[in-house]
Image 1: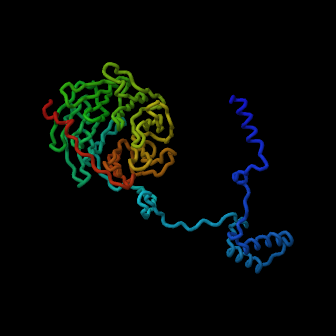
Image 2: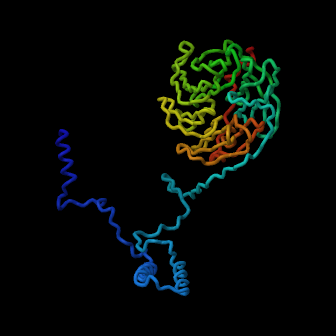
Image 3: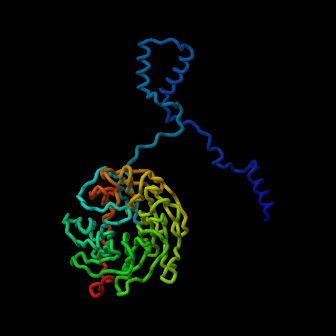
Length: 449
């Protein structure tokens, strides 16, 4: 059938109805028939009589009559405006049940209660000599539930299970201060980036330095991230280097795209894509399948929408190709990206410098920390980006955030030299087992210098 015939058939079908054709029940959805059993006839008669009396004798009134009218109004609930009812009142909700389709068993469903979000930190620790530098990354919470923080030339470890604090390393003035720290996936080994362009690898359990990575950069190393046995470093020289810590010649790939300091690095959960942000206001997406030492400038996407330094980066835990990025004081925006296409999905002006971002692992929420002027933590509902809560307490910009292994508690470190812990993400419905320590990628560290 050609298009003309199809259109003709459609017009006949829609504009003509056979006398014996069954009428579609949807044709009269605007016809409402009052439901007498659901109507309050006493109230209806009162309203009709009052309306009539008001028209006939508008000036007739007395104190006793007004008192009587007030009593009637309270009795009949004068806030109601309708005297016709078209359907019965909804029944009182009963306790929800869940039925197993296979066995037929009936289970009592637990009602979902609204999560309480404390507005104050549950714990505050002193963090003297914390470097007030937007471009550094000095806080990280490892999978073994140990929090690492760099204060000046010293790296401290705080065991969240018992509250014990220990010192990992104190550097001399020529090497320090510490400019970045990052736990390896096993929660035992930790990388420490230094102001002198070197990176040290430590075994936190044995409190022993395993090796020093040299030649990666020509100036300080402000950003680190792990991709299994690959340690990725970002420096003030604008270079990004992939280091295989298992081998002596550790530099395996170099990415060149930034022309100012690299201050943000995050590998996706799949380990396939790397997001990098810099002081040049650029955000790059690198893909391991296309970027290599033979083509070091072949980024997958070069994103130029931010108008200030891009430090805050966070990959979405429930959508692998969704990345959130935050801009500095001249930008103040949180942007969301589809990293497959490079499209900007949304941009939200937060009104203040975005220092760090964290996704809630249990709910569709995003937490951001900010600088001037409120120095707050803001919890957003995704994707509506409606503010759920604002957490205040820090008196200077909240430079660093990190999340506990169970995803419930957030640690924040600010230029006011305090470390605060917030129970902002609540308790997961089902506790996830702790990841098993993967020692194999680091088995060779003790033999390599």
